[in-house]
Amino acid sequence: MTVAHARTLRTECPLPVRCSPHSEATQEWLSGWVRRFDLPLDPAALRRLDAAGFAWYAGRLYPDASAADLRTIAALWTWFFLLDDACDGPQRATGEEVAALRAGVLRVLRAGPRSRPAGFQGPLRRMLVDAWRVPRSRMPQQWQERFADAVAHHLEGNRVEAVNKTRGYAPPVAEYVALRRATSAAYVSYTMIEFATGHVLPDAVYHHPALRALAATGNDLLSWFNDLVSLENDRITSGGHNLVLAIAREQRIPVDRAVETALTRWRAGMRRFMELRARMPSFGPELDAAVSAHVEGIACSVRGTVDWSLESARYAVPQR
Image (tube, rainbow, N blue to C red; front, side, top):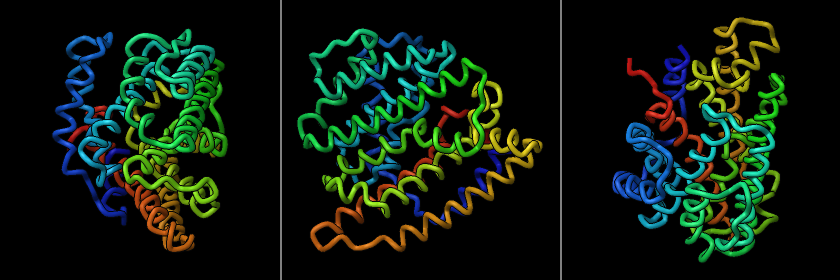
């Protein structure tokens, strides 16, 4: 049911479909890159990893990236998804384990590849060191701190969710929406816009209320869409961490009615997104091109997630 609704939202989405011409070649490269790190995955799990199509996700989010940069981004996204699996997979990590993982990741990002923090060793660390090499060598310190801060925010969200699940606590809607903005990793994806486009925004512009409002609204849209697509799995595994489930619980209504409420909420969010995008102020001739590229990048993050969520084998979407 929810997949059919998600497909309806996809047809309604006013944002244009875009995809990098390098996606297919990057996916082929990515398959070999992943196998360099001796991940503890059997052949079937590696095939599922390939079928997820993380390079296609990168290609939809960053359609103008060069072939080389798309490989770097796809590698980072693959690492992110594997990290999320480590936090919330079948062997669900505790809040303490996620906190230790977070500290180790941040040491690598901030202290460099020679840092070998306890609690973050093995293939995931080696993958991050390798994928981080190009951004670390090319991007200014200001951007590296911005990226690390976004990763810290994301992993703190994962820690809170892990604690919630251990406690058997399912957050109400407002609390869930705020938490989902962290666990989605959308704010991490937005920093990669600057890497892909070569436009690093000054802090005052990056954190301007107009851009922050657009970023938050875009984050909600891609997060809630993913919640719709993954609802059936989330009913079993998420401990109530899904927008539809939070609405059903808070309003004391059946899940099918909560789906309709979530759809209404998503459509209202898209209207707000388009209005915010149209009203983006000018920051002057020296910055407007960079701001425009960033705004377009946020739109690609939304549209790209909509398309990829319905295409990727990661979510096992049945064809109808």
